[in-house]
Image (cartoon, rainbow, N blue to C red; front, side, top):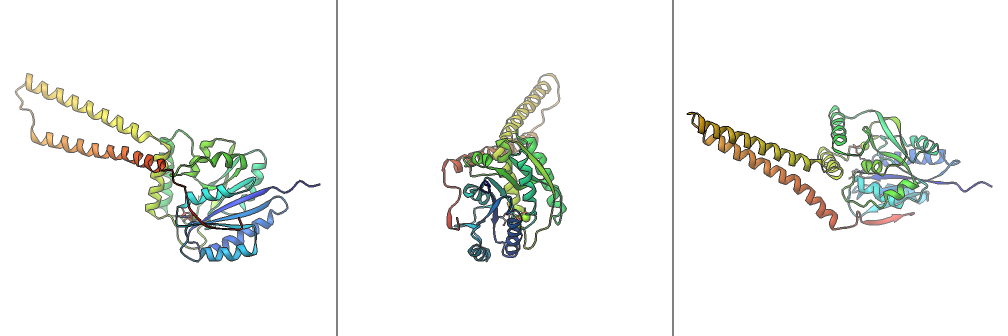
Length: 314
Ligand code: UDP
Ligand code: MG
C-alpha cells in the first residue's frame, strides 16, 4: 500500500499580468505534471485586484483544472498581502511562493522540494544573476540589503526575494503574524527553522512591465526598515545628544571669549544658523517618531489584511 501523496501548494500573486499569465499557467501545469508521481501540486493564484483580463484568463484555466485555485481580492492590496492570503489558504504539506512573471523558474520548485526532504524547513531562492534588470535596480537593491542588515537584529539573506518553499511547520508559525506592514522575506527568517538557499539565475520578465515602480520600491524599502528595526529612533537620540554637546562646547567657548579676551562674540548669523539647523533637525526627528506612530495607529485598528471578493475551486 502506498501512503497517500502529500500536497504541495504553489502561491502565485497576480496583478495585471494578462500578457504573462497564460504562459505562467502553462509552465506551472507542466511542473504540476512533472511532479505528479512524487507529490500532488495545487496552484493558488491570488488576483490582487487585477483590472485587466488576468482574472478572466485564470477563470478559464480553473474550469478545466480543479487543482488551479483562485482567490480574488476586492481591490489591490499589494504583493506582500497577496502572498499572505495564498499562504493562509494553502492546504499543502509544503507551500511555495513564486511570481507570475516567470522571472523565477517554476521548475526550480521541484529542486526546492527535494532539498526540503533532506531535512530543511525553508528553501529560498538566491539570485546568482539577474537578467534584464537595470544597473540602477541592482545597485539600489544591493545597497538596500546592506542597510537593512545593518539596521536589523535578524539576518535577512541578500539577493533573495519571496521565491521560496516552506514546510507546514513554518507556514503554521507564519500564519499568526498578522502585521499589516509586511515584509515576508524578513518575517520567515525571523521565525527561525532550518533554512538553506538554492542558487538560480533570475530571468527577465516574460512579458509586461514591472508592477513595482520606483515609488512602490521606496515604500517597500522604508517599510522593511521601519517594521524590522527601531534603530532610526536610536539614531535620533544619538543625534540629539551630539547636538547638545556641540552647543555646550560652543557656549563655553563664547563664555571664554567674553570673559577673558577682547574679541567680540559673533552675532546674528551664527544664532540664525543654529536656530534654523536645530529647527530642521527637530522636524526631521519628529517625522521619524511620527512614522512609527502612524504604524502603531494602522496596526491598532486591527482591520483584516485583505478582503476577498470571490474564491474559485478553493
Ligand atoms: N504583484 C501583486 N500586487 C502588486 C504588485 C505586484 O500581486 O500590487 C505581483 C506581480 O503580478 C508579480 C509579483 O507580484 O507576480 C512581482 O511583481 P513584479 O514582477 O512586477 O516585481 P519585480 O519583479 O519587478 O520586482
Ligand atoms: Mg518580476
